[in-house]
Every structure is written in C-alpha cells, then in structure tokens.
Amino acid sequence: EVQLVESGGGLVQPGRSLRLSCVASGFTFDNYAVHWVRQAPGKGLEWVSSATWNSGTIGYADSVKGRFTISRDNARNSLYLQMNSLRAEDTAVYYCSKDTGRSGWWYMDVWGKGTTVTVSS
Amino acid sequence: QSALTQPASVSGSPGQSITISCTGTTNDVGGYKFVSWYQQHPGKAPQVMIYDVSRRPSGVSNRFSGSKSGNTASLTISGLQAEDEADYYCSSYTTRNTYVFGTGTKVTVL
Image 1 (cartoon, each protein chain N blue to C red):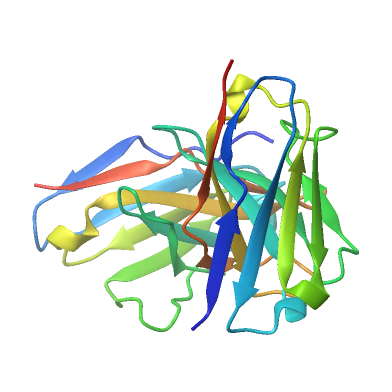
Image 2 (cartoon, rainbow over the protein chains, first blue to last red):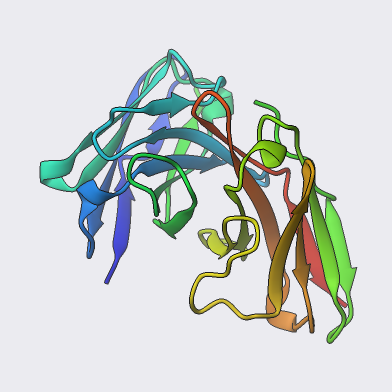
C-alpha cells in the first residue's frame, strides 16, 4: 500500500523550532518529487515547500522562506521540514504529499494524514 | 504568491450540475497545463480529482470534468450526489518553481 506518514508535530512556543518528518512506503521514494502543504484551522490549503527527487530544485512559499528548510533522505525514504522562528500563524495541520513528477511538480497523487503544529505561548 | 480565486460556496440539488471557477494569472493557471483539483472532506486529507486541466485519475468518477480558458480553470460536477459535498481546491504550478492553491470552494448538496 502506498503510504505517507507524518510525525513531529506538537505544541511549541513562538520563536522556537520544530522538525517534521514524513516516512514513505509502498513506492520508490526517490522516483518522485515531494511536497509539504499546510492548513490552518478552518482555513484553506497553503503550499509550503517542494523538492524534486534529488533536491536539485527546491521551492518555498514566501511566508516561510528563510525560516523553513525542506530536505529528503532517499536512503531512508524520508522527507523532512525544519521549521525555525515559528510564529502563531504557522499553526496548522502539515501534510506531506507525493508528486507524480520526478524533476518537476505536476500534481499530488498521495497525501499523508497530516501532523498538527500549534505555535502558542 | 497570491492564492487563486475561487467562489466561497456553490450549491446544487442532487442530479444537477455545478461549476467551480478558479482564476489566476498568466504566471500560473494561464501559463501552464499543470492545473489540478482536489476534494477534501472534513477532517480528511485532500484527494486529487482532476490533473493537467482535464485529466481524471483512475478511480475518479467521470461525473468530474475540468477545463481551462485563458487564466480561468473550471471544475464541473455532473449528476451531483450527496457524497460530493466537500471542499474543493484548485492548484497550479507557477513561475519561480512555486506552487499555489485556490481559496477553496465549499460545495453543498441541497
């Protein structure tokens, strides 16, 4: 079964850091680009960051650029999101998703169930 | 990176057809074929319904169809069913290696 499982969410104070992980199974992880997408409570989907199969091309939303870093370890079938200088507006469910493309971003065909990040003092 | 513009809500009776619009710019919807649509039920992860403007993944009902004209993409749901009640988001690849989602549309089956 093709699956993505996120972890690492939790309650964190403003200004602190958190690292999210996403473990893939059921497909050849290094054949595909991957994404992080978030959804604030009661709000819509917001693209956060993406990486091609070898991290040769990486993109960030303006709202997280300079604070968040996406990385992947193909040997461990894992995707990560290092989140620094967290703000209240970063509070959201964070989804990991798989693209159908390898060296580009086409569309997201597999999603994890998400992990919740709450930034509050 | 401004979100693509969608109507906040659309409703229809069972069996009717509804269309959701998604308006962007030449830097996203109008400039690329990589427009997709996602369905999200409450508390669930999104699921792709349409990709490459008008293509359907296997397993998605043929009641769902997509199109694009200029900077506006559209999703049409024909033969509306109770299970179609959900939030729908368009998305597009954009210039500068970024991605953007629409503002989202809540579909209500009357």
